[in-house]
Amino acid sequence: MTQGPVMTAVLTRRSISRLTEPAPGRPELEELVQAAATAPDHGRIRPWRLIPVTGDERARLGDALGEAAPPEHAQHAANKPLRAPLLLTVVHCPHPDHPRVPRWEQLAATSAMVTTLSLLLHSRGWGSIWRTGPATEAPQVRKYLDLDDGEQLLGWLYIGTPKRPGTGLERPVLDPRTKISWAYAPTR
Image (cartoon, rainbow, N blue to C red; front, side, top):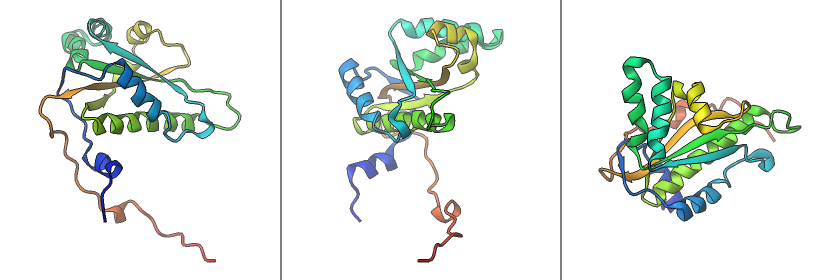
């Protein structure tokens, strides 16, 4: 069986925690987001938005993270945004009264877009890691990002150049028989 570029990207993408300059510029990022927006999305409502955080804004986000953290962890939290040159804030913007698309499907669409974006970034040689945590609920962080009450912060996609290319968190090979249930076999 031949392995095409999509299968290669899926099989080789890893979360890369050690990132450095450069990161994709605005035109490339916009191109990749446009492509990622083709991810499965029932109703094509695109229930998400992205807030890029770069340069000095990373330190200001760090200030909000430090304020939200317990005092003994404030400095560590404040330094987190400095781990990558680009943090792409992932904001889920559900349409609560949508007549056909329940909230869980909207959340799945947002997650599918971020997953597709991480694969696209990887296919271009960029490294990324999706980071979350309790700070996503912190009022200080929500205020800094100017989030509406109905929006849900799903964390940040840290993006940049891998410090050590070819590295990343290894994952064990899955035995698909442990995750596929063939109990239902319709007859014709």
